Length: 394
Ligand SMILES: Cc1ncc(COP(=O)(O)O)c(C=O)c1O
Image 1 (cartoon, rainbow, N blue to C red):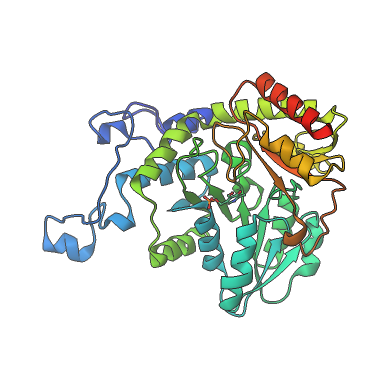
Image 2 (image 1 turned 45 degrees about the horizontal axis):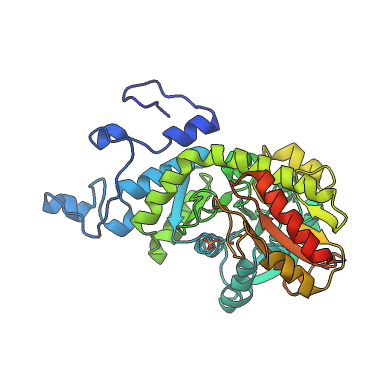
């Protein structure tokens, strides 16, 4: 894409530069650096012919505005896809993408470790519409080929796995899926396209909950669906048919978040690793589930395919009673207890995957907590956790 000045040479920049430039057209907006918030349903046409032919650049608010176009273009640039659809949440991006590829009578393969509500959608709405879901072990790799049925239309991946952080061999699974003519979808919210570009590894449809790191400030919900040229028409048609469009303020907040995404992610990664490594040395801790640690069972896959790690990981504690774990969590000064993640603030939640796994067994051998390491000073976070571990052991 071009630079800050109209008429500059077209070229591809490095991701941090793309994050600054992508989707911006200042001279379409009187030179203002940021694309403004366009609110609107009705778009007027100067002539009957233009109205009838829908030939204006914009035709109806739900079908796109300069604000939504700016974000969609920017995500397309970062993902390296053919087009991007925007939805009002990460979950609606997932459900829309699944609806785009599966029809009644089809079968889909979904990683056992997907985000819980993805699973809920497959087990309720999709099954109600006649689509059968089988859950597979995320570590299956190329052996996923054995799980295909003649009617398998899609494979859904998420890496690392929600809560339990298994890494998937994305290129091996994608190659096997393509051999069977199935679509490959991936929830890439953890890495974002800054740290992992799914399309470069064979994924046809790459999904992000922009709610997390793209927004980055815990103040907006949004989902993005990026597709390759083969799948973009299906995604565009499905999003259009369903009438999905996110609110303009949320789109603007995503554009604002995008400009600092690489810088924030670098800090989340550095602080996250510092806290994770410190936790590994603690006597109260059994294991730290963080793909960028050498101790992670699929660390080699992370190292081969990913350029970085965000601030989200989990810890398996030694077998303390749940009451002591709760006292540890509740007494922390800098970690809020809350779902979602990717904002500037640190978070912690206790979790248990037992009820949301069917193809694999969840048996970590101790209570588990998930941490999101925010942008606070990591030494303050470590001191806070240290005091918490004293409460836990005491
Ligand atoms: C991995 C993952 N994907 C998708 C979502 C859904 O995002 P949203 O809350 O915007 O629907 C979440 C939310 O926690 C998530 O963790």
